[in-house]
Length: 308
Image 1 (cartoon, rainbow, N blue to C red):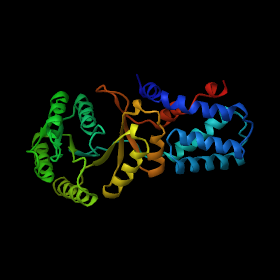
Image 2 (image 1 turned 90 degrees about the horizontal axis):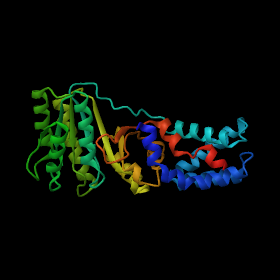
Image 3 (image 1 turned 90 degrees about the vertical axis):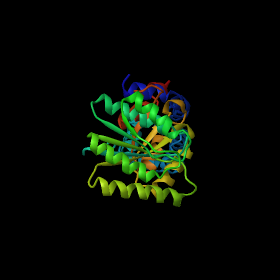
Image 4 (image 1 turned 60 degrees about the horizontal axis):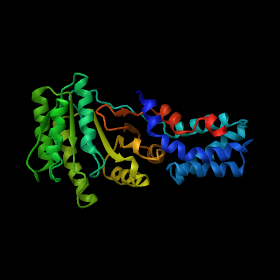
């Protein structure tokens, strides 16, 4: 299945949850007025887009309605999709155009961080690239063991030290090994949770300095892994990590297991951090490049459903 089909299947619970709300709007809809706008905002909040983003989107729909005649369900759906698309208009490409390029992966424990790294590694190996995994999460027991399993499964190289080692030292050795072996991509796993934000900032700062010194000018992505099923808590995590790391994008996992698919909009539109990859299943190929247009097409209930 392509992105649209997998996303549509994964978002079915979300679409079903908001369809009833949209149907209520459409059953009596003839124009944009205070009542229909209030119902629209409630429907958006129900999908976990979040109150702030829902209010902003509703206000934009109202502004457009003042200049256009919106008097059919199809017109309203088109305007809403355009509004949300504009609010999510960020670069979702992974920019890895140097050799080697670096992907720094962060996120709390339990969100699918190691699995996501393994799937990314598998993708690039399948494309003929040499991938180096860096087991810099030295604080969690068995983290390096899990990453090594994925390295073997994907056909990637790995550098690891003992538990409790200095993560920056692991990164240093990983870069040296990547240079020696002609690796195309270095994917760095980092500690999911340290004692406080200052510790996290210090640790990421040390890793940043190592990368800057050893690979000046290297293309770099800093990706935060979030679990879609945690809803607004994922937004809070993104806010927190974005304050201590220069995030370039989000990997959103378990999108197929949530009835709150609007969390993608909440993160992308609300925080201005693009969702670049989404997990829509357990398979090795189920971590997919994010497609904004196809996502919104799958998220919003079809007009025929709203009019039924």
